[in-house]
Figure (cartoon, rainbow, N blue to C red):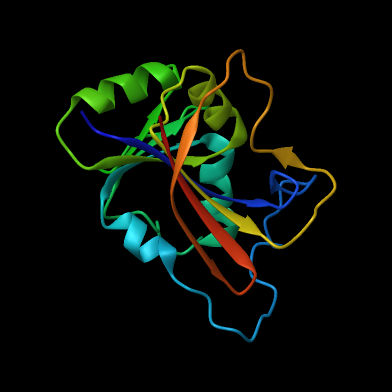
Length: 176
C-alpha cells in the first residue's frame, strides 16, 4: 500500500498562508543564505500529488504561470469548478478521502498532499496521512489560513527526522 505524505511549510504559529492567502513570507531568516533543498530529496519518492483548487490556482497564476511545475507527476486537483483534465492533471469533484483511498490501493510511489488547508484537514480527520513532513518557517503571521484545525481524535506521531537550515526547521513524523 502506498504512503500518503503531507509535505508543507507553515509559520511558527501554524499558518500555511497569510490572511490574504499569500505565501511570500516563505523563506529563511537570511535572504542571502543558501537554503537546503529538502524538496529535491522528498520528491524522488513521489509520483502523485493531490491539491485543492485554490492551491492549483496559486501555482498557475502566481508561483509558476509559465509551466506546470509537477509535469513529471500525476496531479489530482479537487474542485467543484469545471476544468478539462489533461494526461497528468486530473480535475475531479470527488471526495478527497475517497480519491486518496483509491490511490493508496494502486501501484506506485508516495502520494503527496500539497494543500490547501481544507484538503489537509479532511485527510487528517480521516487519519489518512501516513507521514507529516512540515517545514517550520521563522515567521509569526498572527493570522491567516491554519494548517490544523480541531480534530475529533488524537493522532499520535513518531518523530523520525529533523534538520535545520537558515532558521527553518524540518520536522518529519510518521503515525505510530
